[in-house]
Length: 135
View 1 (tube, rainbow, N blue to C red):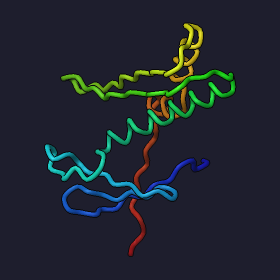
View 2: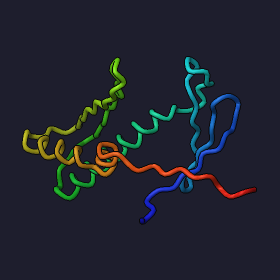
View 3: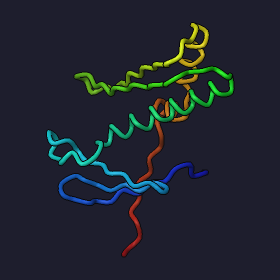
View 4: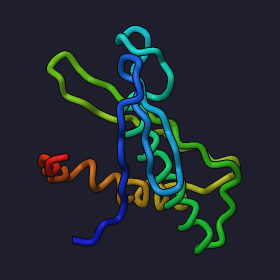
């Protein structure tokens, strides 16, 4: 398989704070105060939404550029919801600063439904976990 992304997460204490390295970028993850963290950075599900939103915005921007459509400021709002049975759902809302017709919106919504991260989340991914070698 071809590697398309790589990240490393290390405990950075106190509590649930962790440092993330991905490419040339340094990020921090933590839990909010209400979950016992110190709110030093986004929580893991916040990063999931951020990745989905970024993929959506970038993909739509690329598509619009190819079509020579002016989107203006593009905003992707995301909310992760969970019902009492534990089922999760993401509500994604798109806003464009430019005026688009119904046909353009229909196409953008179709493209949003098929972004790489959208498909990976919807289809599920195999997650294999192994122990590192000694030392």
